[in-house]
Image (cartoon, rainbow, N blue to C red; front, side):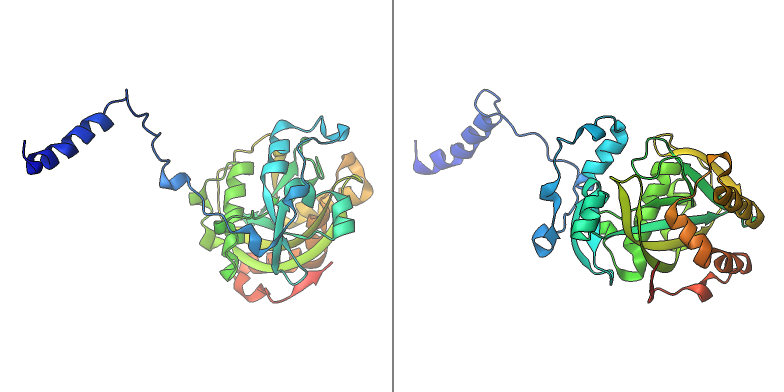
Length: 287
């Protein structure tokens, strides 16, 4: 047999041997590119996540399974008081008062205020399973942008608006098509600290997002106990009951800060269609 005919046959022999499962175990197929996230390299920031342990103390043993997963899997964005990103840490660590006090951990957050076409504000009562501030009444949706590429985008608060769209679906079943990210108006930012029950608390730099849309709501019972739309007068009555301690009604501290400092004048702009005139993203209100 000539050398040229040997070379001609060699690839065929290799092809046959590779196609036989007797000689080679084929690797599993690669995952779809849509399921692959692009992480931000943690070495660029101070990362505190190593302090989180899955062996929690006895007080955590009764934590709802869904809330427990979120507390350990969600990575919040740590910022300084100028809203500059300085690191990331678990939701669990970010809400421990001992970390808030000792390490001054401050994380980025958002609060959504959704109005219908009658200019009524959608409120939710947080579920009993919530780790911080269970069963308190608050604005439409309150949560955190996560330490992921799509929610770290600084320009026009796009990362925060992306996070708001995600959580409206998670908590209230509001589909993305009903709340396009371009329809959110970021009106301002506030920085506040609030203890919940001694162990847990909040220390947040909170983006205040307004949107006017008629939406279909299907609350997630792991997140939300009850919902209601309120007019201005309805909200004032809710505040009165909370102040009087009637019906055991309580408001979240961040919602109360917005009610006391901004909400009514911003509600005027909602009704007039002039929200753009109220925007002030340069100031960080320390309340």
